[in-house]
Image 1 (tube, rainbow, N blue to C red):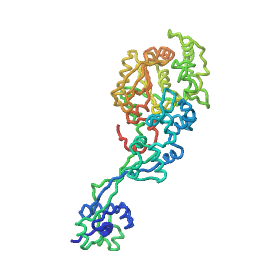
Image 2: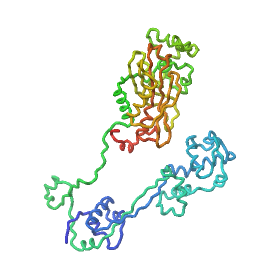
Image 3: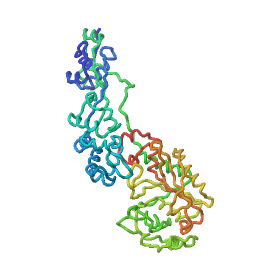
Image 4: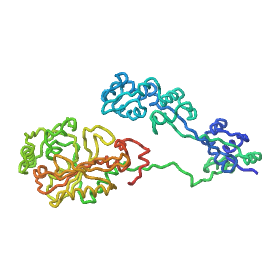
Length: 508
């Protein structure tokens, strides 16, 4: 029996020896042919029963650049241990980073590994070396031994690590260690079958295969001697990643859609606000901690904005701060300073936008919302950023009540797909009563604060000419996006993680 094969298939078939397993890389080297082409030819020959493909899984270990740095400088846990031993075996969390030449965050992240090794115990803010830690001063741990071996070899098979305590090392490395790159791979070997040997004993005819008819084939007449490769419409193709909106942008648009469909109008204002609209109009005292430099970004140029020119507005706000004005309040009882009210700040909340809208038209019924970036001097962690998106809203209505505020917020979060949320009593200078909104994060097993809400105090509304109840809220949207898209760290929303962005569905 004779049959036409492609040149690659013919070469593979003729090179295999009866009864001898040959690994694909070795065969590729012999034939001076790309491994992918050898593998493709082997698959076709295996389908015909002429070649048997045998697979042998194995695990490959390689050291990363971070691993090489750990070998050179010591793993973080050892650096902390040695730093403590150099200072009588004990030190505070504030002292150790300086002793070890590490960042405070690195020391904090090392606590789990230190406890796992039994080297150090933590009591409050103090770290103390244990007896086990004292004995480990000059004895490398199983993970350190493997790192040293990998640094020397560059990499090896897991089977070559039999001399090391691999289970203990794996426990220290964890699932995704930055120090080592562990990958599962497969050795593929080819074996000539009896059918293949029988077929090879006949006339093996190699015919060039082509994908398409070209002018060159027509002109030379070679088209008569080639085999046209059939198209397999069931074969997989390269994934296509169409353009789509960023997950955070989609959450913003969903938020906008939710409030618009609930009958709200949208308002907007600039990032730079005067202290008057960001703080004073909200009855926030001028000595409030939030107005200090450590909490607020002040603008240097221009550093001031003129006070509003609406007749009587500034005087009414001044009076309510100093003595309560005509609201029945006693105010904050201090001398209000117009210079502080004119200071320019990067807005700390979009409430500055909705309070402007309230001042422009204080007569209900009205429902207003705003979405925008706000700026605060926050310490960055998994749920805090110094720049984030916020949605603010107000409802002006003589029939408005605290119950309708909670109902509005509940309706919004239900529209966004949440079922587990709660309200807790809170305090804000400009609302009374006040609540904080919390959403449950299943992965973190923790409640996430989403923002605050309440009913504007008369000291806020009456100077603006509003005599009706005003419901108000300010909610974070970055945390909302974090929960909706199953991210455990809010910073992920701003990283170019293409794998995650491609995997995110276009609609949510």
